[in-house]
Length: 600
Image (cartoon, rainbow, N blue to C red):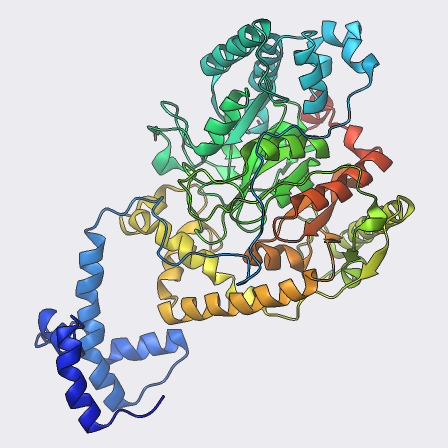
């Protein structure tokens, strides 16, 4: 830009004033520009150290007044009542300019789903013993309900019984919605008898993570300060599943304020190994679905909270594209990263549930109206499939911990388990090759994604700033260095300038991922892949499903797709599921709970 001359400045001042643009001197006067600073240069020097900056003494003297007066603006802003569901004026869009999706959503359109074998639907021994249906996929339960072999009421009572029997021991249930569930089930049965069938979720019992508002029923966010919080409206996700005929059984546990698996009721446990955590933060949906306590569940993900508990508990988790499912009525953690998706016992179940919940609702401006082009018959050979080859061959870091091993494992045990996991995942690649997939090795973008992960910390701290300032965070169960209370406090020291820079860097990452995905429809990776962090920032969809077991614990393969490409992600997942036996393996709950070393 050309330099501003003295003449240009003098002529522009009247124009600026006439246009209503306040000059810095005017703003200073309005904000008490003559008042003495509220802190000295020593405070600025400390702030400079935190920000990695250095100003001269003269620059600090000049900055003292404006920096001090900013405090008045902060205090004035804090007097405003800004509800948690108020979106920032800065909105994240995963699609690059000129590459927005085309077409319209066809939510609730009839999907091509394989019919269960007639022997499954007509088997009297199975319908006579309702407990035998606990682990059946939605596709089977839907066929039984539609054919009136089983009533929704009977299924609901069976699942309510299992939730009562196992829910407390797994610490996966916050609120049992028994009265509502029985009323919804009875209505589903009446409608079916009258000839009205809403679709494949008609009468099917489910649960939701306890961050979705339910009118007149507690929504606690897993956190002690909100333990008695009751919402006045239903979240869009709750409305849509109700309209699809679903039966809400329970509000399921979540790590407090969507972090980890610990909530005010305890640590949610893994049905495969109850001495271990189910991971989080969609802990209850993962545990309850794996344990056969619900037919399916709804979780959320900001940075791994669907993929991690789904892989840990051995269920199929779908994390849709950012902006695919309305977050109206859902607790906000990170406005630019929060996503909602199904956690089910089969891939087709994920397709059915996603089909009922995606699409714009006019209440979440981030949601894009794009189609879900589900086609389970697309040959794998027609899809361009990559895989993160280096991650499948990676040598475990035995000194660094992590990797999903059990706590306390020695380095050699950790290495053994990691190598066994790698072997399973390589076998999964071979299964897909045998099914017709042509796999190409890929490299993920060479980008310091971890350097911008503080975007989440900053947004979460902003969302719960009132809780931090009121000391309400002191009531949260977890108080360690990595827990929310400390993160909220330390995020106060993230400069706004660096947050904006991180968001701009995120645009560069989006461009790199767009370049990569221009050559592929999907790519395969371990669930612990670096792509998990990358794609939560870029908004790409992903799914995971069981690929075997190591020491009795499920291991999973992750499939990541193009923006709005959930159909291709699930198509590849379905091919793998059909070619393997893993999806039919369920945890022996009574046996596993009987072996628990920790107290209930």
